[in-house]
Length: 233
Image (tube, rainbow, N blue to C red):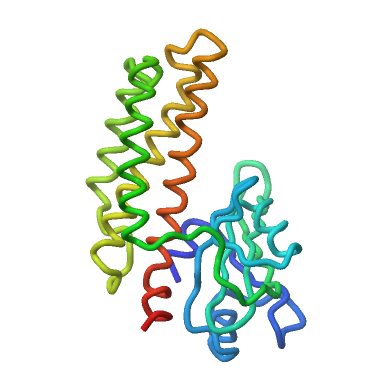
């Protein structure tokens, strides 16, 4: 529960079957279990890429707007977060309302297996590195180096990124996906790097886009691996 709430002040769930008003997260999870939910899948959709979604359009649209959602396993329900800032200036806190909506019972879109995700991450990273190095746009200098160093320090300090019970490959895939995602973010934050012509900028975007997409697919595969294994078993 603490891992879900983090530093947010309040999490509530609205639209839960059998509840006329929003309820707290503890009660909501208990209610979902009573409704037959045996697991939760993460979805990380982006425009043009409904990663982890299964429909219907209303749910997909809200999930795409939030760029994240949770799809229940065992009941045709999904949860989309809506984040609010509340409180007076100087004492602002974050509140999250999870909107519970019906979903289509179908395989989630574009989610690879762990083995596929691991292979794709290695391939995408290698291909993008070659392109970015050739164009001298991978991002360099003191700012980029400091950011990479800070990321490595965070990674070393918090290696346990999944709860006990996940397969070792899931931990490996998640760590690599997070590393790849961080490096892509650094590349974007450093502007156009060494790219000076329109064609070089386009090549840079072309190199980063599939890597970012592959990293998100791998994140979803890792987070959902326990549910997927249980379903296959």
